[in-house]
Image 1 (tube, rainbow, N blue to C red):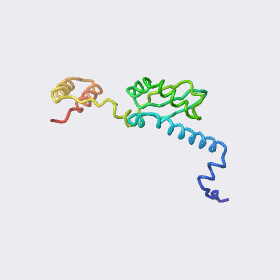
Image 2 (cartoon, rainbow, N blue to C red):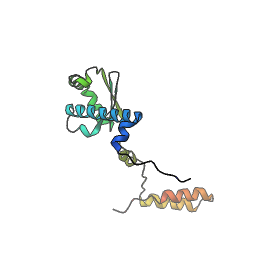
Image 3 (tube, one colour):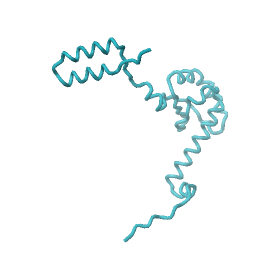
Image 4 (cartoon, rainbow, N blue to C red):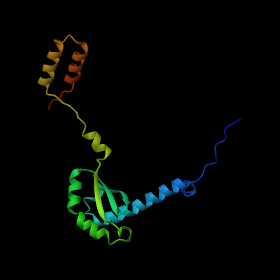
Length: 151
């Protein structure tokens, strides 16, 4: 018995044919429309930092890239509520919630990168040479390898 793959179907056919995918696609389109309406009311500088995550039961959940923008948008919350309620899609908007979620690039960039001066690294190497425990000596030598490049 040989395996015969199913014939390929166009992506549009798949999205319209499967109930789960159809619902997911519809929700993505709805969120895209809400995002456009939100961006029309935001200041141009705030637009790349704010995304619509959900809108259910009168609550609009916005994902913001950092705390500074979340604070800035909280100060504008009453104005945003008033302006967004003018749109048919947001007529039952009761409140706006903000959740801070840094982008993945920012999360990795804020990781710890220890750098030591050359004198601190030399002190660690000297201390490591006097240690009998091989694991502790190796740990100190690894730490000493994090020296700052010369200026």
